Image 1 (cartoon, rainbow, N blue to C red):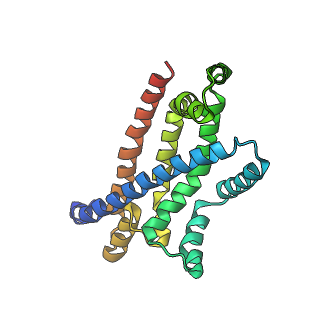
Image 2: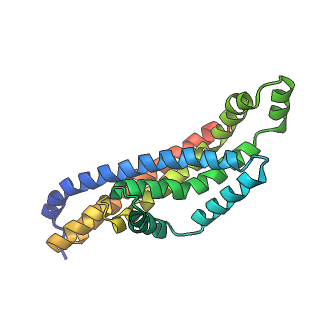
Image 3: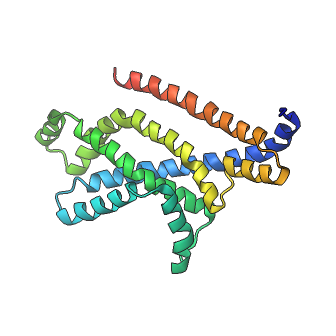
Length: 216
């Protein structure tokens, strides 16, 4: 078996198209997971049991079912209820929703890690509850959990190939389509593997450096 650089050259336009879709799914899915995860975490701290209980049930269900099942459900079942999105939008929503249940736990740990004295100081200053959260608690909590949130971004990146199952042509989808059309599998799949390494490994090093900086 010989390496065919011509196949690599022919595949590269498809690779760039797939990379763009992958980064779009990653960026938008991350935004959804970070925002919704914070909402889940705040709702779980409400004193009202009838709020906490449904949120807990929903998040546990999402976290304990496979992402692939959720993708299929959103893509194939929702249209039966006249709720239709594009394949990419469905994938973004599924990734964001799935990982929001994990970022919720990260936020919760960050909030619980804020020293009790900070809550007492806010109470002593008679700060409104909203001001206490936005000016005192959340800035400290989020600063503590940035590295952990970044780890989930890398996990989301590695899960983007699942979008191929609902016809989204991200990097692996483009490689699979090219391979089937040209009967050349080694070159495109190798390019995709190297691309994931070149994205995820530097990102992990950056997260380690950021963690060391934040814990000083």
